Length: 381
Ligand code: ADP
Ligand code: MG
Image 1 (cartoon, protein in one colour):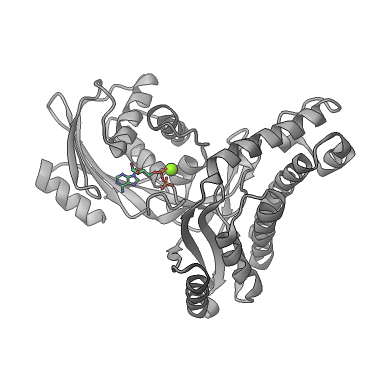
Image 2 (image 1 turned 180 degrees about the vertical axis):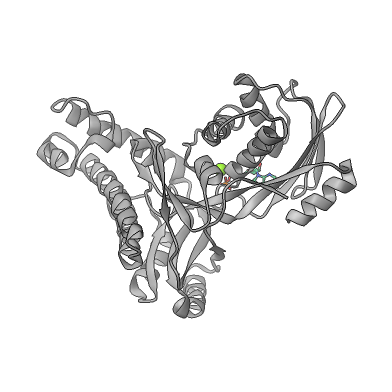
């Protein structure tokens, strides 16, 4: 893909471009903790968006999307473009200019191998690649953290997706053999070692998206807020479930709906699981790390109730197999992928088993996506 972008740029717009890549991401553990201002543990993957860019002398940008095989001319200060993919680029430029940058028209080709809409955040890869590229070429001086915010605000303001900042953070700060413990309140982060020698990280994409996803997401957020409101009547200084302990929750349990209690209890436990999982990584203890992943799935399924039949089926296969260290649903729920940590020795047989059993049960094989934890946004020489 990288070479294809380079060759195509040369053919379409000539020599002299600079090339950049920014990856998609997985989240190892920490689900529904972000909006409760807790912790997540994403890592960048070896699938990325590649961008070639060079300032031009004209009045407009010329942009070619390799994967959509579309070329457009874009006025940097004109209307929002019609193509969805172009809005990410337009949005990044607007967000940069809001922060004082001056961006002249450019030529750009881009494309990638992050599967779209599979939960690997191809959109954050795109915003981060474009942001990183423009930042370097125009020497704008934005930090990686600022670029992450520019990407996030691009989604909010130009695409209409009110996402958190984890995906952009992972795409910009990721590294080989490291995952990122991100504190969603302070945005402080710590790189944790992730080198499960003898194991592979593999995703099974159910390719389903149940319609409950967005309505139930809002319900969960409201339930978490309801729990916080109860605790806040008794304990000062509580901003979110991040500040609530299980002890507090149990003390005031009788004042809340049982469903609210269950939701809050999941979030508090999940936050702790992220921290415990990080301790395990620091000790190189991948068996414990895998158990935390399994615990995360069980909590999401039984306490937070955001799983679905397909995800439970896949996680359950993993939990029963001694060659699988950890298996859990990844992302908001009601569809999408599971993420699995599988021993090399069991890998081939396990993929065959999953394909076979899932197809038998649901009539269609899951898509298998093997990933390696990899480098964040960078320039390609
Ligand atoms: P994801 O979970 O992968 O981030 P989104 O729906 O948030 O899914 O983002 C997918 C959108 O991002 C696509 O519809 C497209 O507009 C843009 N996009 C992602 N990858 C590419 C690509 N390789 N080429 C062009 N546009 C892309
Ligand atoms: Mg996205």
